[in-house]
Length: 160
Image (tube, rainbow, N blue to C red; front, side):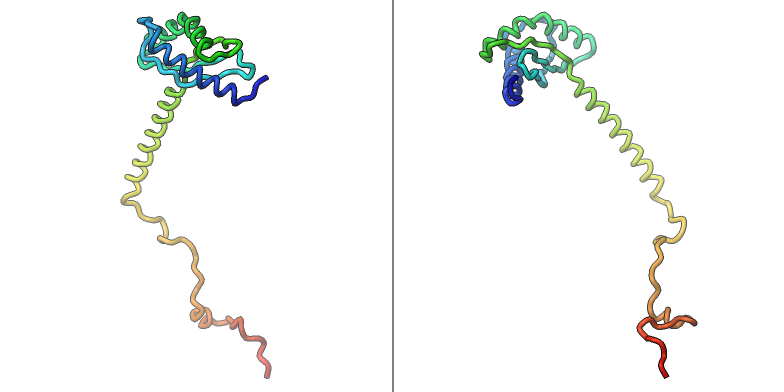
C-alpha cells in the first residue's frame, strides 16, 4: 500500500497527461469539446478514474464517451510512458456530474430569489398587526411610586 500523497500526485499527473494527449494526439472526429476535470487513483495505484465533461447535447456526450473508450489504450500507454510507474494504472472514464449539479443549484437559487422578491413586494405596504414594538418595557420608577399599594424597595420596615 502507498500513501495518499503519492496517489494524489499520480492522479494529478494522469489528469495532465490525458488532457494533453487528447489535445495533441487523438484525432477522433467523435471527440467533442472534452474537459478533463479530475482524476483519482486507488490506494494501490492500479486503477485510475478520470472524470470529464463534454460541452454539447446528449448525442455529442455519447459520441465523446465512445471516442474516449476507443482511445483508452493509447491514453494508458502515454500515461505509462510519462509517469514512469512500475505498473500503469487502468483508466476508467466517468462523466462528471458537477456541471449538472451546479445547474440544479443555480435553478434552486433563482427560485429562492423569486420567492424573496415576491415576499418583499407583498410586505412593502404592510403594517404591523399590533404595535410596532410588541415587547413590554419596564415602567419608569416615578410611575411605579405613584401607584397605590406600592412600596419603595430601598426602604426597610418603618420603625417608629
